[in-house]
Length: 157
Image (tube, rainbow, N blue to C red; front, side):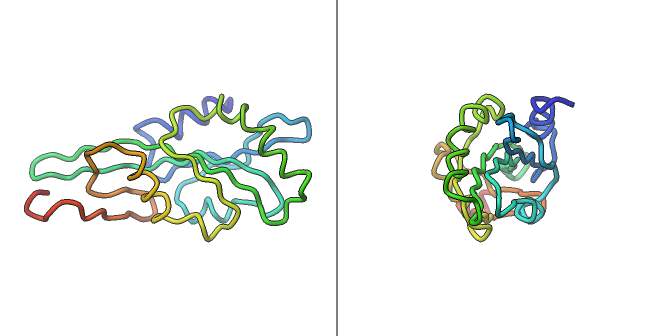
């Protein structure tokens, strides 16, 4: 399966919340797949402290009302530079950016992280809320967790 197909499988609205694709650059500076999976915790575990990596992560914005539920897919790009990456290799992040932009299309949010502790439901939810429009979902689903947003009074849900 091509990388574009792998990305499409993760980014489609039918994809499970929390689905992700993790890539890096190989020795010839070509984008290569590292892993796919589901859930924020497994993604954090897959990040390598010695590598520059990029992830596409599927978050579902779920809006629940009295008689209807709608789900909107929000794609999040995570730019990872591990703490053990040598300074000269850190430039790989810049070299890979145009290639990643071609692969990861339609991102609602981009996060630059260097610590696994920064990859949290709260950080992603806050970023999506800041990037979103006036209408906010009831909660964001991450596959292995959800973040209630508490914007709406219970009687209006």
